[in-house]
Length: 236
Image 1: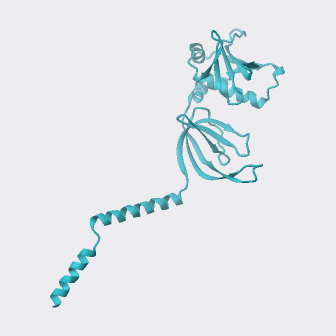
Image 2 (image 1 turned 135 degrees about the horizontal axis):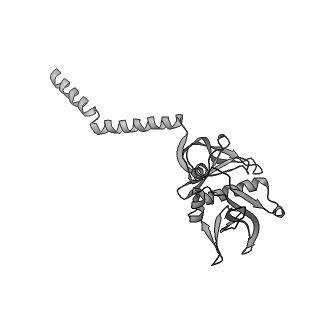
Image 3 (image 1 turned 180 degrees about the vertical axis):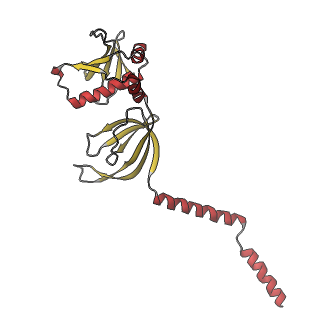
């Protein structure tokens, strides 16, 4: 009788022990739990983006970038590095947090805050500055009433165009370190206001613009002017 009872208990224990598949499922669940704990302990997210610009015109400073063709904006109040140039590849760490927009009832909105940012590769503007190693000249009519802040902004746009241009004259001028410059004026085309830049190479204190650029002040879009066809071509 004792032998029968012992045998029955052995069969019961074998039938109750978890099989290989059940053990595997438990390990998978435990692994997911550990991963979730790690995420909760480290809420930072990481990405690599192409730097476009800084923007200090709103309640919160912003850093604008591109991921492929997608344009992305981050809150940049916690990051003091202002050395990035358009086109630089940067590695960022950011977290999700709230912002409060003035005049909106202090209603919180979700946003992505940059915690740290580091350049990992020079863009074409950075490479241009190192190769050319001299400022671009510019001049404008005082009648246009352009602020010094916006003149600096236009300089960055002109520099971006020159650094990325495929025009042979510009590439040769950079290589030979000839003096590049541009004029600035306001013009209206097709019932829309633009800032027009006339790119030139200075020779013996004489200038003759060879490429006209139209800058849309609302979007910062750069257009090359196609003189023979009298039309604007978006750059790049």
